[in-house]
Image 1 (cartoon, helix red, strand yellow):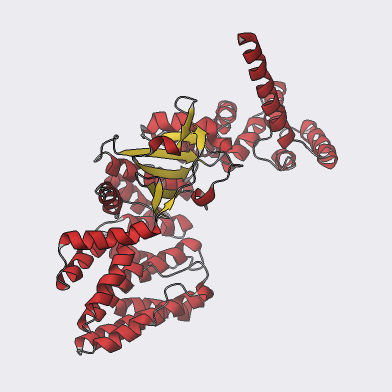
Image 2 (tube, rainbow, N blue to C red; image 1 turned 60 degrees about the horizontal axis):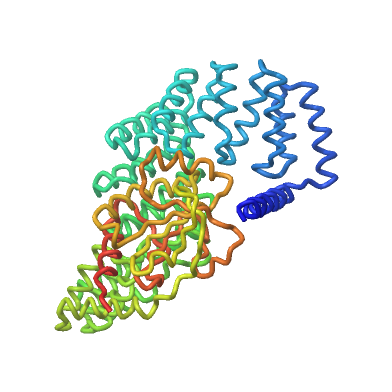
Length: 511
């Protein structure tokens, strides 16, 4: 019986291997092109462009023939750094964990090439080895002290571990490289990551006035974030900045016109409230559109503020029921601190006690909750199968991620900060890796970071149903009955409390 079982296992493994090989099958035309490009590389293995053309011909990040060919060439040309550099560079650019051994070999052959050390530093993002990242970046900066990218990445390596040092190094980038895009990027990150309003405004102002490259994506993103912040804190200034950008801007005028319209509506509504005319204020606010299709993907980040403003106007117009209902709907999806205080305030005005408010909010959540599509996937820790249904009776925080995902890595510390406040008996934490090509990096990432989620191999071909992630990170909170209660949320330093409320309020439901 054991012999038969072993044979069946071997057959299944062989079938899987054949299937995998078939996925990498090259067409006759590809093979012919690759053969010609191989000859060009072997005619001059120091020709980086020939390597790049050869690699691109495979049209696939992780083709086994590609890795095998470069292992052959590194043995055949042991003193030529270009060979391991070419494939290492390609793997880094495609977030493939196979990059590091090739780049280390290149660094031995060409230790004075700064780009090799920078690529090695970039490769460490997959396992989050900050010590190695900084070591490699220091070497890159010593070899090329005028490279702004190296200095910027070195500053960013301290972002989650030493904020004072990060901020100091980021400002040094702004001082040393004022004409470089990295200066704008540094100011943008300083602004959005600051939790001190006055400091945030100071960084945003510096960015706005830093017009060395007004057409850059970082400048556009930074000024948009600045105006959206001002819409919630100083609509007069938001109007002025948006108007200036619309006049001076050589592109994207619609996104500034939309913000001018919203700022104007906010100013007029505030004036109407001050003049004891809440109906006019409410009518103005009801016309506000934060997601004008003409603005493309540049929607206005003021949803919570707008709902709070409308509630204020509705209450002043003696329509407190409307104020409460609109807040309860948004709070049921996004239980932020500001919404929490407001929904209970207007509930109190309607003579609702705390328990009645909680029940009203849960009724909305309960009506929206749907059974999550089950899955059974291999986990990295034990190699066994883990099913969503295994956690019936517990909450489940489910995140889709992959090691090369920067926003995922930024979010994990905040998940950990919140989850340590709850018992593992009450909530499970699952992370589904969306990139099979990065499977190799997952165990090292978990070991280096100490993050506590159960890491699972996702199966791209499975039916994900209502847990189909549009990308990474994608997050879901699933209740004790296996229903999706929250989805589409992102967590950062400013809204950790929101995730804590999601968990606490769902755990409190007893039925």
